[in-house]
Length: 267
Image (cartoon, rainbow, N blue to C red; front, top):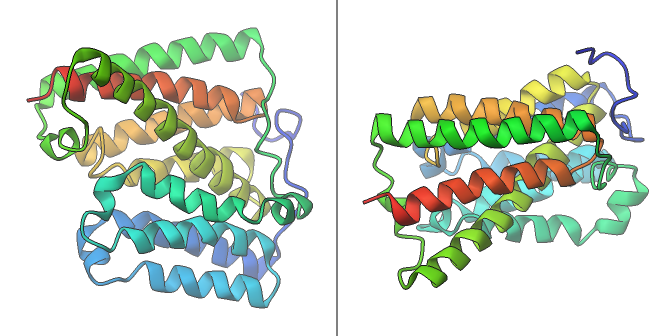
């Protein structure tokens, strides 16, 4: 597949300059290492992200500024005890701050990603393939590695089956929308404004998505690899569909699988 052309996706109107590009890459790298407990314990992530946000504001580097709004808010919340246990609520909260400036972001030409996109046989076929392969991979990871996910299970409600199903579906929808907005939306867009080709924007956002699953589901370094591959899958759907809706739909099915495993199979 040729990623060199621009016909498969609406590229952002905003183009970052050389110094802004450097800080965009640095912001995403800094955000990605927030997953490590040692870094979080020393408050090493929110401080530089706040600095990058202020630099973006001072120099009117719009892509850098708007990128760091959700990144700073999210990492700041996560330094507090139990902050990481409120996921995806913490991410939703960070995105609310981002969308407070919706009209300004749109006027800056940085909201091309927030589009329904186009459906095609290729998009539908790959979406079905990715849903099936992700579900199988998640079950295999759970049964073969027997991971301890008791901390995740504690965050889900306990009750009758209808309540559990409603909670699982609700989690799947909210988590899928929030994560796709951040990774296949905001981060992907920022990488494109920084001059990345579609191929490298696809790779870099998938790397960040994978690393941030070190303590998630799937977890561990195997989980990082699986989540990274999944980030490539949903990123590819975003490119081919020219929008965010179809990656969200694919992601919802994967998260329904995760919720089902946590609620009905995990100890």
